[in-house]
Image (cartoon, rainbow, N blue to C red; front, side):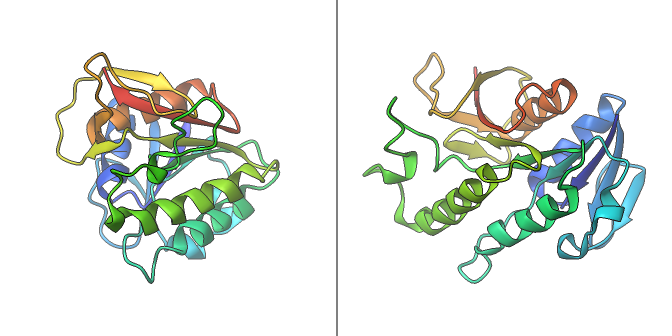
Length: 209
């Protein structure tokens, strides 16, 4: 299985790349500068310059792009469009590192995590930008995408347990009533989905056990 991880030098991208390499998968790190991952194969190219020919031959492409500042938030949509257009009509699957703010908190799917009174105002623009990108992704019937939302508390430096609960469109809490997962355990879940390919054109979510 051949995998390309776009933005592989980022915190999530690096852990996903290294997890996939550790499992013996054929991984290419797509980076703009020096490769900081365990991947032996490297494609030095900006995400926004990627074309169909760059991604030809991969079974899975992982989108680990992230943007945090107000002026770059629209890139969540534009970057995803670049990758979707490059993969349009192919059998290559696209797995997206998503956000938690758009997870639903009711069975009617009318209220999201980011709508809650306790959701920090500082994160609302990011949640809105990522929700917009997800909405646009849902309209792409020409791409075999899977959107993977983390738990609400997404911990960059959290420990790796290797255990997680798989959810869907709604926020899932663990047995302790927590919505929490480390980047390391998220990477485990992402690679599990890479291997299984069980959720084509679906959003899934993960939380630590």
